[in-house]
Length: 327
Image (cartoon, rainbow, N blue to C red):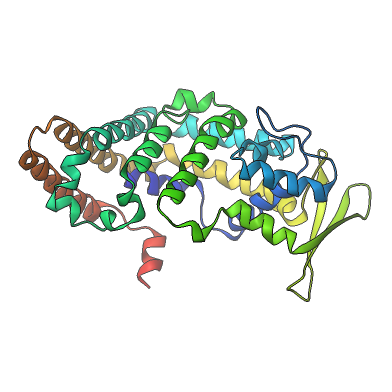
């Protein structure tokens, strides 16, 4: 499954300067965008840019990520819907649906075989059990279940998904569960990222100047910094967005759509036999884990999984990212 998602990531989002700019600016867009309403349970966003940032941060602190979606210009929302549609058009539905079904089955294994995992020398020898996730099994399992049963579960559901509703439901639940996982892990020193952002904003003064009918300048002057941060803004369909993001948005969307088309192209087709082999092998292992009635059976299946993983790793084509990591 990792092969499927890693391969897909490389095809959808090529590592280019344009896409890096697009990704880096998406959060700034969401924080600076203006919205007259953010959907169920989200607080209304005021029209004033400075107050809009504070309100959006408050929505995120309240686990209302749909505020991000509603802050976008309608064109940007439409473009992202088209990217999702392009993915659904070109992605093999059998591979996608089967992958997500196995994610749900993985949640079944995690829920019903917890004791076997914690008494298995094979499982306990992996780095996972030394991590925060391994120590908080139930919370991690709940996150996997939430993801597997969301509107991402099948191509058809994904195609008909409303991003705003998805963020209001599944997105909010994932944020809530992730926060609970952080709290029960005792890692409170990391802090809520939105709380830290709010505290950062509180340390400085924000000003917005509309320099023309559709252009403006956002200035953030922090008390602990000599030079202010200036962001040139432009109005797009009533929303203020960073100028460089506006300039690169269309090119980024075009490249993303082109990447989606490669899912039905020859390069991805070459990987399909490996992906199908991986899914079949993983499904077989999950079934055996679910049906295991003794610790010995369970451990033998885990060993089989390790062997299959090593085989798949050797079969997987090397990506540019992999080669760069080696260097």
